[in-house]
Length: 369
Image 1: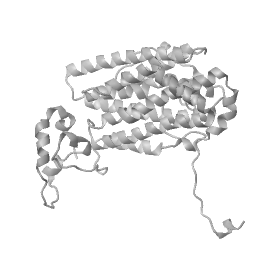
Image 2: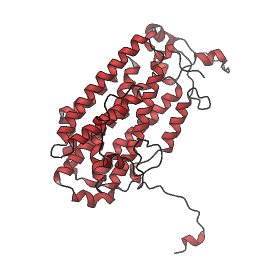
Image 3: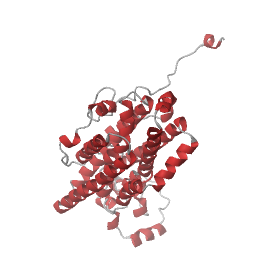
Image 4: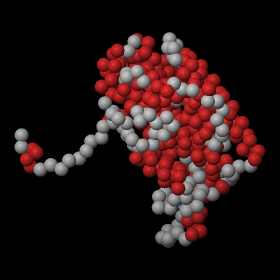
């Protein structure tokens, strides 16, 4: 199976009137095996809205077009985890030792992250499906969308373990009422409505590689001081996933960019830099607001710039910020990975506190109490 055809990738090139009229044409009653021409003309389910009357094919994982699809799929499956397997209740004593400001800030930080992951799960990943270059890419976006929902669920697990109902309600009301948080998410949501599928991928890469990281700073900060260690372990699992998500959307953006004209390439680079500047300014404003009362603002800004460079690298562009502007505290980089891995490679391992059950053979004597 070849990559999806240009017509499939650009539904605007189709005549919607002709497509609607095709609904009146029955498939007939023939029972045949599709020949090469019929297979070549077949479409994926995601493309059917633009190709009514066409024959639809199932995804075939035994016919890989882009080896990167299979590699990423296997990584996603190998890294699968659930928040219920992380013993968050072990953090209750640590939670109680935090100040009122630290607890309130933590709940607000995680609520902000929940909003971004909810948006990515329900819109950001799914809006990339219909313009995917391969049918396997479509499947991967559904996989990633599910994990985004797992991430959003994870923050609720933290809340239900550590917080009162009143604290949770206050945090969600704060998220809906906070103008800067709302602007962060709606800026990206607007780009997900773009007619240009590559702009959608740019926005998705920015969210997974940049927009979340001001919020991730606080649990890493606590972990570097021996606090909330199990919560930090779960955050590391999320960060490992985000590294793959941002990398994959960026990789597919680069493959799509190869087919564009030189003028398109220049315009998309300009769009990328403008969006980065907008989101960076919002991150700085958000960080200054949500971390009011803390003394680590400069390091948060370094961390945001560090990840802004990561986003650009995922998209195939050179880093924007200098080494001096991205000098994150070594203790924060160490907290990213217990193995002191400072290169954002979260592709292996499930976290030091992650619990997986093991099956053990039993016999009759085991049940003789």
